Amino acid sequence: MRILVTGASGFIGGRFARFALEQGFDVRVNGRRAEGVEHLVRRGAQFIPGDLNDPDLARRLCQGVEAVVHCAGAVGNWGRYQDFYQGNVAVTENVVEACLKEHVRRLVHLSSPSIYFNGRSQLGITEDQVPRRFHDHYGATKYLAEQKVFGAQEFGLEVLALRPRFVTGAGDVSIFPRLLQMQRKRRLAIIGNGLNKVDFTSVQNLNEALVSALLADEAALGQAYNISNGHPLPLWDVVNYVMRQMHLPQVTRYRSYGLAYSLAALNEGACLLWPGRPQPTLSRLGMQVMSKDFTLDISRARQFLDYRPSVSLWSALDEFCGWWKAQDLPSGKD
Image 1 (cartoon, rainbow, N blue to C red):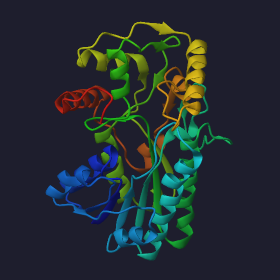
Image 2 (tube, one colour):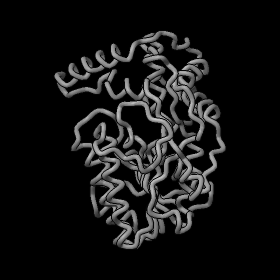
Image 3 (cartoon, rainbow, N blue to C red):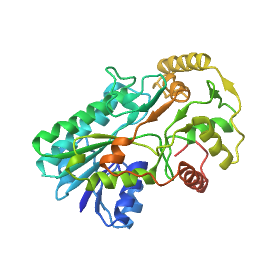
Image 4 (cartoon, rainbow, N blue to C red):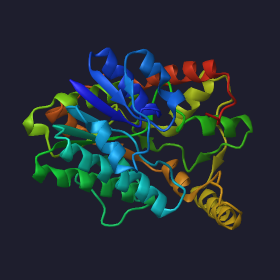
């Protein structure tokens, strides 16, 4: 099967493209950074550079492929709505239209469970628990992008969306690097009581889920799927495991949620007034994420995708730590 993987210069897209090549797929890739896909080209991938904001480029990427795995998008918790809309919704529209015009059979869309987040603790979230109002620009625009994908079903495109939580492994620069940097400066503190449980996903398990989505039968189509390792753990136990592996002191200081939230609000306010509006080191959303329970029900993926996460979180963390040490980079820089 010839497939296109967008966002292949990023962590998830790059890891999946490599896995797909190892599984014998004929892989075409697109990404923002040519240097980020060099390892894929060496393994046999075809690289077509360009910006997915260009609908003509999106159509050229889709020529002659049977399926698309769309991993490109704007991520983060800081920035303007229009930037998230352009990176998540407008780009996805271009990919969907290109799939339809080039008669691509299937589109697997990488979405996010951030669409569920409401600032409060949530346990066992199912795919149908979509809020009426979204908590941030990222969640709102990821959901809108999903709707663009699902809307293409009536024109004959086979579609599925995956919502993986806290994906980690070698190549992850989003979850732990900033925490490592803060702990090196002794600025990291446990928010709240430190008992909040969350879900993580090994990137290797996500790779298996993406392949399953490419090959799934008709009964699986037209649905969104929560993806995780299926074993929620106390977030701060996980953080301290990484600290031990990286030979850093354990995080033992506690800070009340109310105080942390207030400090984050002040930090955000200062950044809004600063030229260029730099991303704050503390954000209100970040304090909520680090202190609230957030776990997913993955029953639907087990049933329709035969999803059986086999790689433990501890293995994924060991993989990340080994990779991060080998980078010889100060924590927090990619």
